[in-house]
Image (cartoon, rainbow, N blue to C red; front, side, top):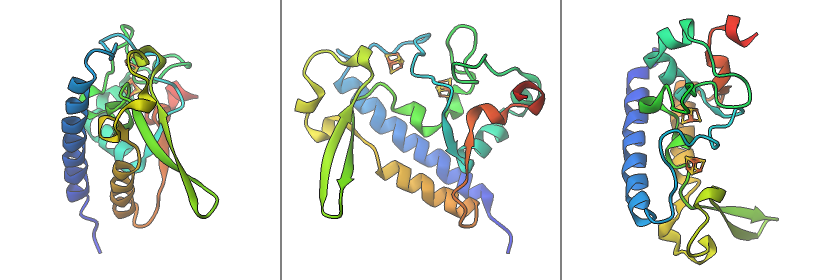
Amino acid sequence: MQRCTGTVFDNLIKLYKEVDQCSNELTLVHSMRLMCRPGCCSCCVDDLTVFEVEAENIKNHYSELLSEGKPHAEGACAFLDDNGGCRIYAHRPYVCRTQGLPLRWIEEIGEEDAVEMRDICPMNDTGDAIETLPAVCCWTIGPVEEKLALLQFELGEGNLLRASLRTLFCREFCA
Ligand code: SF4
Ligand code: SF4
């Protein structure tokens, strides 16, 4: 049976739009504390991996950059430019779309207990402590990851492969 990859990528773009909408709403809520701005890039770390479905989406949109461009020097994300900007901003992975917001997630402890964890970029950790924020004012990690895993499952025919962002560049530059 032939894979209908078009639908997978269409659904990925739809998911990005939903993420952006919710993330923009939370950005407004936290406008006083968020220091995120163009050129601020210490959150663009070098060891990010994404599901193959997000990696393939980047490859589909940036073939010239990936075959002829050079990755940023090791120590920061390969897609950063010299001014701290993202060279794949329009098609950046999900994880880059919520960076800077107060994050919350549930960690299982043993078989029956669970604890809620929270985190935020140190530069945005001002004002009310994030532990005191209502849950709806935080980005909840988990639901979007599950949707991405389903898209990956479909594209990879059951395979949950991940790829490092740096390895998407031409081998010559990654050797
Ligand atoms: S893909 Fe873009 S936004 Fe994401 S870590 Fe790399 S440079 Fe930063
Ligand atoms: S999350 Fe932190 S490091 Fe990243 S852009 Fe926002 S303030 Fe800068």
